[in-house]
Length: 71
Ligand code: SF4
Ligand code: SF4
Image (cartoon, rainbow, N blue to C red; front, side, top):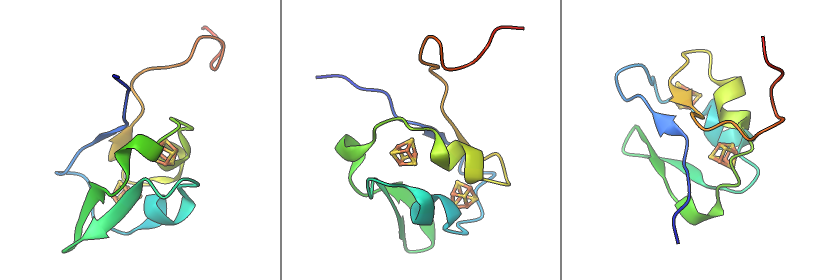
């Protein structure tokens, strides 16, 4: 089985934990001061982590059709 995961930019991430706190499926975690996927298979691609990150360090690169308006 293949599935998409949000992409973490380690250069931008300051490990603030905001995305970990907001993730409804416990997919993310902080390990030794670094953001990691604790339970990657839990990710539902809800995009909340992308929305909450002030550093723009996590990106959901695959947009579900109809999720965003064109233009
Ligand atoms: S919210 Fe952004 S900066 Fe904070 S831990 Fe998550 S990816 Fe890193
Ligand atoms: S897209 Fe949603 S479920 Fe997946 S890691 Fe981000 S907040 Fe968690």
